[in-house]
Image (cartoon, rainbow over the protein chains, first blue to last red):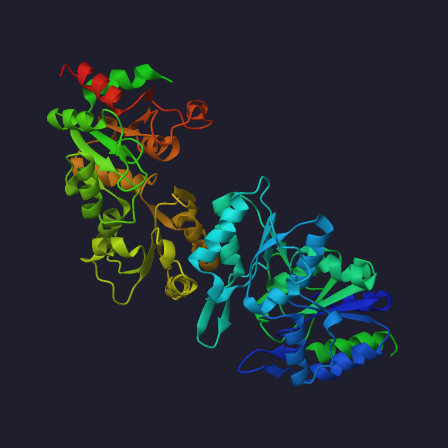
Length: 272
Length: 272
């Protein structure tokens, strides 16, 4: 690991992007559990001169409900600081004058309440879980294939995730189904999409070279951020595995035990 | 079209393979409708010295029910003469000692009654239609990802098909979903898979050069047969479109108006 890379760059930083699950907390029964030192680390970052944003691929809840969960764990986070695929998609829809047909989890539908949805001219799929019935997927397919220029957005591209009762198919599998059926390529909204990271940078009003992404997912967090010109720091919590440090294509700019250590180094190098 | 190719080869033929939908009949309300001259053409082929087999990608019914439908249309066809993906899959399962987890249409399940299905070591998906619930697809996924060497069979690889009330997602879309989720490549059983055509040739005990495939699908019927060393004749019925005659990669060995004309030419060149 080229540890010196990111330490040399610390003085030029103006903002930090934090992944949430696996960096702030571990999911599990109920709300999950905060990772040691992460609540204090977030507090210290917020008190510093660095801007702070949170980046998650969560699409089974609105940001409001998600932030409320983190509040119960002890984190002081505002909805406006959280970037997840659904609101990012809403921004894109409005910019491009698109009206979506939604195939998403019922609990994330409120994120789209300000978007015109009649006479749809694109399709958005998220991690809809049980709502991925044949009827619902077929409806999304029919809308998509009926468009002169089919536009498909996928909120993330995960293959599967783990729940208490076993592995579950994630949105990426259904994205592939619609891509094949309609001979289109989905636009992925969420990590590791450059558009997603760029929307966070735009909100902070800073350049990629002035931003550091901290995450536990080497490909989606670190690699995705690096593709946009940011530096990417890997934490050894969450889904981190030692093999991440010898990945064939993605090399983190640094690797630390956890968020608390990252913030220690960050603020020390900035004299705070 | 190199019409002479197939006519020169007619004397060496020992068997004919016929696609069904679009060659024998057009689907529609109820049982559909026989294509002009096709009932008589099948009779003439059966009375000739050529062997005859029928090849379909139908997986929403057992061969018994499918043959009964064709009987109501006026065709004299036996179940043993019909090759569809499900029985071909059963042969492969038995040869390789595989026990499938099935995600197929309820009406085709009886085709698998002779196959051991406990403790599955592979997954078979067909055009399951409404049975493609999230729960069912997730179960197939869990079986597949839990295998040391995941083996996935797909009964065809169609993108979608047309029904009275609109376009419907076909098995190929769900094949792609499982392929992505499990990072595997499905083995396709049915046209245009070489294994499928080879099983028909093996049943007739003839070589590819001794067989002619007649179909309305340039890629799956004609191209698939040609890939196995057979000749492929295109009929201008069913899903035929004029653009098929200028396809960039697949060139039929001949093109005739319909099955009746094909059989006329075949038998005339054989002096029958």
